[in-house]
Image (cartoon, rainbow, N blue to C red; front, side, top):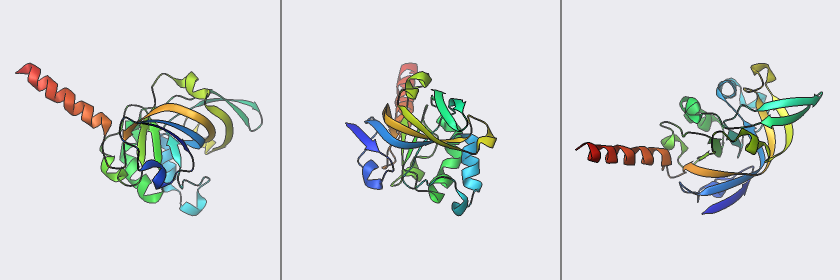
Length: 191
C-alpha cells in the first residue's frame, strides 16, 4: 500500500501501516542524531525547544548553508544509520509521543517498545541530494552548540519519500524478518 501522511501524526495515522508499505510524509520533520537524542532525554519537558507530540524524527545530520543570519538553505540531508539510536529509542518513546522515526539500515531490539506507539521508516542511503528536494523550508534550528549535524533542525517537507515501513505498530520488523530468512536459507545451503 502507499500512504501520504502529514505531521503532526496521530496514532490513527500510523496504526494501519504495515512493513513493506510505502509512505510519503509532508509537514514539519525534526532531525535527530546521537547527541540530539541524548539532549532530548536529558531535557525536562517544559524546557524542550520543540513539541514532539505526533512528531516525525529523521535520523539525519544535514549539511546547511547560512545565506544570511538565521536563513538556512539545505545542501544535503541524507539518512544516518538508525541502529546508533536503538538504545535510546525505548526511553524516547516513553517520554515523548513521537509517532515516526526515519533513517537507514533498520534498528535493533526496538520493535516491542514501538508497539502501539510509533513506526520506523527506511530511506535509501546515499540519497542526500535527493532528500533536499523534499525540503521546502528550514523553519528553525535548536541546539546548534552540538554542531551542525547533531543539532535539531525543523524541516518543512513536501512528499518526502519514498519511505519504506521497516517496523510497524504491531511490532513486525522487516529487517529482522529478512535476516531470519537469510539465516534459514544459509543453513539450508550449508547442509
